[in-house]
Amino acid sequence: MWFFSEEERQLQEVVRDFAKNELLPRAEHHDEEETFNLEAFKKMGELGLLGITADPEYGGSGLGATAATIVMEELGKVCASSTLSYLAHAILCINNIDKNASPEQKAKYLPKLISGEWVGCMGMSEPDYGSDAIGIQTRAKKEGDHYLINGSKMWITNAQYADIAYVYTRTGDEKKDLSTFILEKENGHFQFGKPIHKMGMRASPTGELIFDNAKVPASQLVGEEGDSVSHMMKNLDIERITISGISLGIARACVEQSVRYAGERKQFGKEIGSFQLIQKMLAEMSTETEMMSHFLYSVCKEYDNGTQGPAVAARVKLALPKMTTKIALDAIQLHGGYGYSREFPLERFMRDNKLNEIGAGTNEVMILIIAKDLLRESRR
Ligand SMILES: Cc1cc2nc3c(=O)[nH]c(=O)nc-3n(C[C@H](O)[C@H](O)[C@H](O)COP(=O)(O)OP(=O)(O)OC[C@H]3O[C@@H](n4cnc5c(N)ncnc54)[C@H](O)[C@@H]3O)c2cc1C
Image (tube, rainbow, N blue to C red; front, side, top):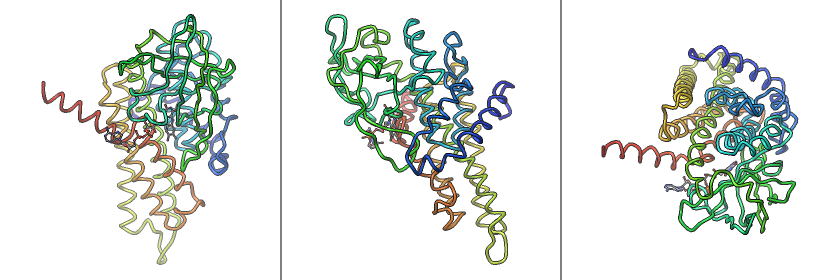
């Protein structure tokens, strides 16, 4: 992107090499076997990628949404599911602790999460509360110097590997009485429920977290009791922007693979790239990808400058995953039977990208946020 800084360009190069050397050779295997590439995850810690947005005082890189999105795009182009796990750790867990926790909590958790010694996750969604995140029912009840937590969390990325969980709970009867805790597996604050098997993002572990009268010291509370709605919403913005980077990476991979194939595959004695219907597909796929890239990184810069609100993050999150699903389907079409087979990674790209239309808020929820913002504007 023409407006990337020198530092951002260097980051892009480093992550591109890392993805090629560490993720690409094992991406198909981990998708097939539904296993997590823990080795590559640990290496991301050594490279300094895990604390991309965190305060350097605790070992982070102190960078913003632009840098984090560059990482998502480059990793996502090669192995979207490893990237989803990276996002859950770096943005949902570390970035939340970095932005909302006390200095003591940061000192205790960030260095080990940033180095990759500990794996983190974030628990918001529940079996009966997904889009209605403010309605969650996992309860934390104060009893003297500790809380008793009961309930469960569903669809939690990294659940089975997590040492630390950043978890939203209900602490009062008003709809907005939500409070956050940093929970430690080794002290029995949460149990792993069961793994969830999925159509895509199969190399990213997903599962349930269970809280059965979990006794948690009051010192694990983040901020004040009942003040979590605002920081939940704030972190959703950066989550929606950065997850869209994964879709951009997938779209780029689809375009590159399709251009290559159009020059190799022959039918009727000619390369299929010489047929105008194939050319139309390639031209549209690449135009849409460039459009997405400009939109996404321009929003990243606005986010980093503090000049952007939730409706803009929602627009990015609505546009990119949806367009990328179309691009991935076109790429499959362009490859004919080979596109539908596992010979090429296109069917994996399509399966993986579909998650981005659901996780971090569905397309329909993005439409609600955008429409609410538009109609509020029109009433001014
Ligand atoms: C692979 C994967 C990883 C995930 N990782 C995490 C994680 O790490 N942490 C976490 O907390 N959560 C995680 N999630 C959960 C994810 O954020 C939710 O799946 C998502 O928010 C949707 O919630 P739901 O699945 O309960 O769907 P529902 O909310 O039940 O939605 C069902 C359908 O109804 C539609 N709908 C709902 N409300 C409205 C409305 N008001 N108007 C119109 N349509 C509506 C939805 O758009 C959808 O089409 C993950 C999910 C998946 C699949």
